[in-house]
Length: 199
Image (tube, rainbow, N blue to C red; front, side, top):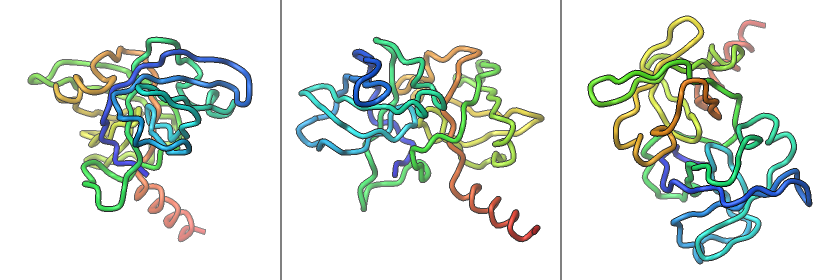
């Protein structure tokens, strides 16, 4: 489990197709890798991935064909920046919201505009996930815990403060970019309960 609070902005060193998995990525990081075990989970742009190899300032993760097809990992190339977060430990501060690292779908950046020093992103979620988005609710986009500002039609808005722009990939995002989206766990269970009651 994660909190959606990015703790390092890593970079893809290389991507190797084929082998034991559909793809293996090596990611450069500022993490002290001596303290990260093989088999540990790290959220990489919102995807919970397992460390399968490591060096002093990098780690490697494998991705299945399904992960490549259903997330943005299928487009990763050398040099791309990646939002990183190590797994939550019991007793850690929960600064964002509970994030599993299981991507529900791909959202698209529809608009970006300056707003009082911040940037307001308008995001279009997959149609089947729209019902899980609520004003002042939480959503994880590329592994970043964000508060939904407003919902309108088939889109929703999030405000990205300068700090978040500087320490995550949001500072370099452009209109048309795709984002790994994970809906809030509470919204998922409420929807399931309502579906059950309605039957």
